[in-house]
Image 1 (cartoon, rainbow, N blue to C red):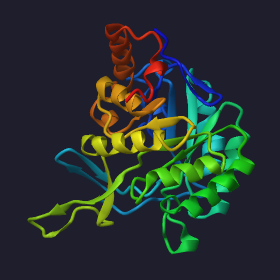
Image 2: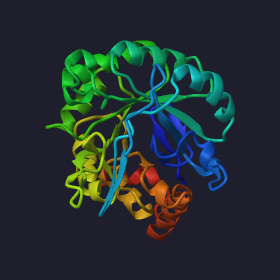
Image 3: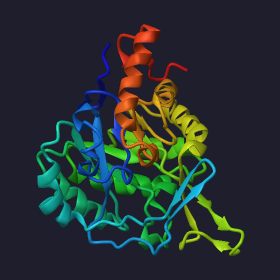
Length: 300
């Protein structure tokens, strides 16, 4: 069977990508996973300048997922270009950089520098970041703000532009249409859902930031619903994520409308899960008599 899929001009050997922030730069997992078996690796969020991230504690387990408020800890785009890129550029899979920022100028600076890297074929623009010029409101919670930042990056970035959408909105389809209209080649969804964890004995929040982003199995039904809604609203390819723990979950996202998927929280539980999902999707296709996995996209 054919497991290849296309995100516009970007051809993936299979639909399985690893989600930003859960797989490092790929090299951290190389002892556990044959990286060449993946459709691609989306590296951790990259910003213009070095960020320490939020104070500890910044991760908390819940009954069916995890909360995090890491705060985009990274050493900045120049460190990525000079130090990380040379180490990962020859991996036999697509390397995609998650681009983050607090202003359009910061997004643009990062995108411009990544655009110059020959072996990075795509970026994932994280518009769930707080826009400091708008009092901290995330770019991705307002269609006009989303359109503005995507348009600015589209002018600079000449390769495949994926826009990662926040679920913390009234209408994710409206934001997806704004991104498509501004020149996005694809949208990925969903990012984490805001939540709180409380320690009843200490009578205080567990996370230093009080709130954090919920990921894992708990968010899957919501993510599936949003992928299904966005599929009906846009013509560009969708990359689905949110609580994908096995191959069946991945297939469900494709049936709902995703052309590819990302594995996130599951990587912390089983470092080999991404490759197991690739194999499981192939087995499902064989069992179902599906010759081309792209044929099931949006079937429901």
